[in-house]
Length: 404
Image (cartoon, rainbow, N blue to C red; front, side, top):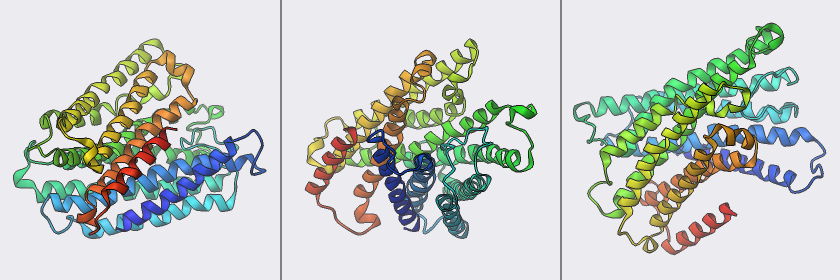
């Protein structure tokens, strides 16, 4: 519940920042008399929605609720570590929010690309320390989740015994444990560059700013799957029970598809970097590897559709949410296939096409899975009953408005 309240509050903060961004983009005038406010809102909005809203809710809150139930246990294996990982988020958020009070000269974007010679070092250090605390919290939570799954379920760990949600958490926690230290290393090198003149990324000192991009996106692309894989598990559980079938269509293939997505997520990072001048062979490899991810993703979508086959979706609000999730994620995936082509990507780089792709996959896909989970398990988790007709109205209102 604490993760949920924290994520909800952070989500409201991130949403208010997106309103400020849209107000600034409504006309050509400077609505806030300071260009840096716009750049600051873009930077902190991304951190807020990814690290402080989505991860605490879809990983922290739902996993703490559902894993003990599915493992038939009273609690996770390390409850104190779980508590500590939550309380690390509070100072992490405070450090991030202090940037808005100290100085508006923060226009790095969420990627923190060097060179950062013109940035205020104090605000930059606060952002990096905030991300360090958030990363430690994520690693502790991941250790707790994966230890609980393997220790509590040690006698029954067969590939087909565990639910798809538990499999999604296993893969997500492994991705987190591998990728978070990479990000921590990269942002620590930024601190050393800015405060001790180590020149890791400064070309004037024989540093290479492209090195940071490689390190960041080696974390950044698995992070996308860290956010969406728990959503896959949630939607698979919901569709399985909502369809009234014994198990989801082709469960084994669904498990291997998630494992494949997790592995492939680590070998496609440079498709974010086609504009830096990669040679043709390197571009061809990352193009091909990125397109291959469409295969396990298509297997999942096909299995979901076959599972829901024969279900009268308009009779139940939760069925509408599941179909809405499939539509949103499919649209995001199709735009991703377009961007995997290096020639097209170079022309579309830093355009709203990329912004739309990212938000269709994460903002729409993840939010739909979060909404679906709380609607489906509301009576179990919150002991409340929701009106089916109002839920349908809510779905159509949200589905239409977010596409407009």
